[in-house]
Amino acid sequence: MSEPILATHNLTKRFGALVATDDVSIDLRRGEIHAIIGPNGAGKSTLIKQICGGLRPDAGRVAFNGRDVSHQGTAERARAGLGRTFQISELAMEDSVLENAVLGAIGAEAGAWRFWRPALKTRALIDRAEAALDRVGLADQRHMRCADLSHGQRRQLEVAVALTLAPKAFVMDEPMAGLGADGSKTMTGFLESLRDEAPILLVEHDMDAVFALADRISVLVYGKIIATGTVDQIRASKEVRDAYLGDAA
Amino acid sequence: MRLSEPLVNTIVLAGLLAVPLYALVVDEPFTITLATRAAILALAAVGLNILLGIGGLVSFGHAVFFGIGGYAMGILAFHAQTYTTLDLAVFTTEGTKSMPVIWLVAMGLSAAIAFLIGLLSLRTSGVYFIMITLAFGQMFFYFAISWAQYGGEDGLSIYVRNGFPGLNTLVPIQFFGICFTILCITLFLKARLQASSFGLALNAARQTPARVETVGLNPTRLKLLAFVISGAITGLAGALFADLNRFVSPTMFSWQLSGELIVLIIIGGVGRLMGPVIGACIFVALEHFLGGLTEFWHVYLGIILLCIVLFGRGGVIGLLTGKVGAHV
Image (cartoon, rainbow over all chains, first blue to last red; front, side, top):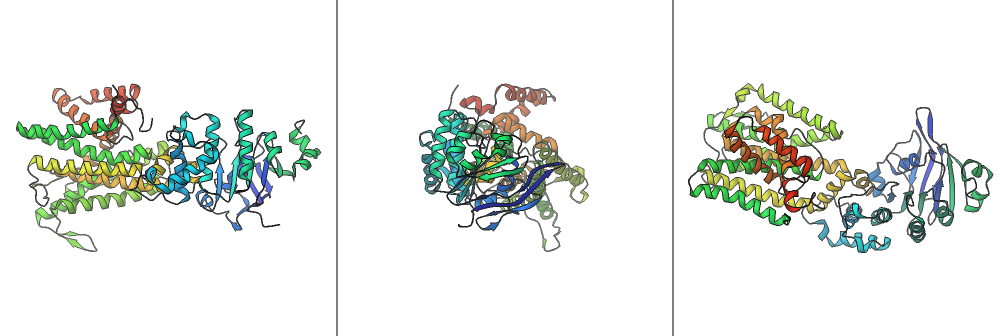
């Protein structure tokens, strides 16, 4: 078993009396999709923020690609190869689809300190951006303004921007959020195809998607991981049923 | 009315050039001075527009850089005209009457101060950013008032306009030529900057800083550099403005001036290349024509501003091109 690409060790975060993240140790191995599920308010977003760098844990550490990144900021972790998508789309709404993807390409090439050459006429940036848009099926929409995209297309663009970074691991916060049944199915197929490129830590509410995609599932309840296992193990676990799944399993 | 933006831009610049040329023909030097004033205010606002339009940061203290540019000119020229030595601890200078040197000093100082102010104020955002930049503006204003060595509240008069190699800067049309050329060069550079990787990233940092961070870029550093570039341009405008009036006073640091620069941009069109230029032309024209009729002409400026904010988002450029934003 190779070393996990991404791991948290005894991560703890308190907000006053509330323990939002309670001694969480999870890992993401190469080639896998590891889903984190849990009821609303279980602390999934808080956990994601600590993994990606927006929030500093009170205790514990985050290791990425064999290095302790606990003290690095979001931008540094992104440069190290952590690709993130947001639950609520974080995109430049006034800009075109292509410009959003080019932003990712600029980040990937650490090229924000170029002041003369038009970004949209820089071959390397355009190639990288268009390749990512192709992957998610937004190539034809590249000149559309982001604000004019459908919700589903925005979710795709979120992933495309992360893809431009050629990340070593993805952290995706509810990529299916707000998608219809069809959209969900398309996205599920797409994430499946991403697995070989980089492993995915997937926070998701859509149980069909989770059961279809995940190699392993961790269940987060009140900030604590109450179970980690394969899909079958999680479905069979009585504790998980009581705490979260109910009849869905 | 639906005009393409490049067409509008060309018309505006051609208009700003045509007015003083016409004035030259009919021998109305004061009109040339008005056009020069518009060009210089436009330049100052182009600087602010980089920060406000692309970066989305409302600096309510940009008069700081206008004033620094003004005082850079005033102090250097004062020492040159009084044959006194300016002692700067590490070196001394006799001052200078050379415009290019003054411009470099004005831009360098403005950039350095912008870096420091930006470093502190970018820790905040929204209304706190506005307030902290305003506070810096007031600090400089009151410092200038108490700076007795350079005229204090009364300011400094410079008797002969500074020189530019090969030109007679006292001839109004020649000085206008200098200011207009600088404005055009700056507009060109600003257009390149806006389309560059830096411009794209800065524009994204205004809309979605979280995204910019997750692609590995630092939004605060992008904004800090925008602040520095913006300050340097406004500083250059300040030096020209002081040369236009041959006079520097603390009012160049006043918060009213900071506000006027913002108003110019809003009237013309936030983030648009020519927004500040249109805004400055309208502002100077109103100031002149309405100012001749009533000393309360700001009331009318206020009404125009109100109409534009309520009905014409995108400013005059937005109305002419039918597009609210640069991208829409």
